[in-house]
Length: 369
Image (cartoon, rainbow, N blue to C red; front, side, top):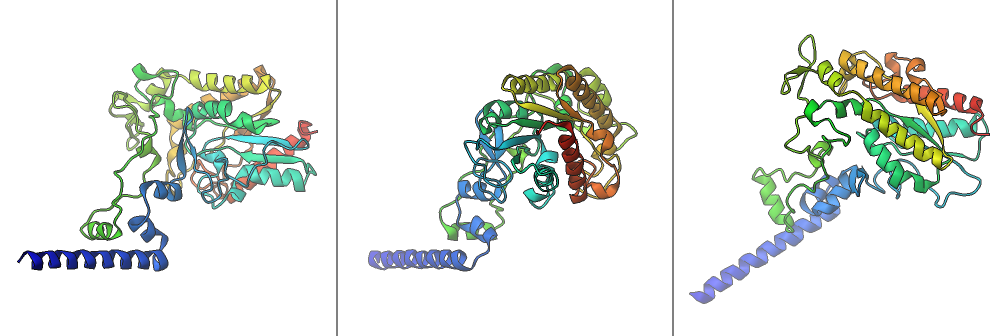
């Protein structure tokens, strides 16, 4: 009896082992990438392949190196020669997704790369290089720390700052919690339990309805502290309201003036000037129409337009006060639909137009001579 039971157990174990080996062989050699992530890869391997972001000390997060068109230093674009060659004039573009090139296919479509090509090909500045240091969802808070701890190591001769809209979100918080840090931006979290090592077990779990969640959004990774109250926005009425705060969005912004946005820009400018790095400040441009695209109504909201106008006024004032280079992109960028993907992010035509204007301004300013 015991012998038969042992033989049955052994036979079952061998069958499961054969199925495990067979399933692994099939997925490894014939499975699509999604199947390999679902049944074979570890959580860390999946994050490396699927997540655009990685945790960074002090900065909180940045781009995952060697993913798609992100180089080994974690910047969107080709590899960067370090240390910087003596004959190179390096410009670093700072900002959020509108610098990174959100919703665009590759780094070649973002305005920093197009700016480099125009300066080299059309204006003959063969020594100029433009590094794209934009990261989606970065505000002036992250950029200030990123410039302090990472960007300066690139040896930039010039920085271009293009910020405004993401700092509106930083102000949409309970006025009692509005402080000098970006309080709504939580600390990076490693989410999700470790996936089973057995490919066969994962197959059974998935067939039984377990999603085996593979990807997490940036908001999942950076959840705000539970004791803080950010604005739960309702834009369905005539006026946008932070329903959980019992205030209109415009009232919250009025109670939380952009003093930290100004402070962050001042700190970046001061650090740059102390190292003889030229600074070009850009006002932030947008299109006020509603688009049939993700977040297509964001910049049609009057309270956001008013907040961006406040930020752009600060940029204009700092450029004059600190004697930096300045270009009024908000006043010169067309708002027509062909230039925009969703009113916030530009289309290919938009990034080409922005690069055209900037290359003309820089070539005429004498800053590259």
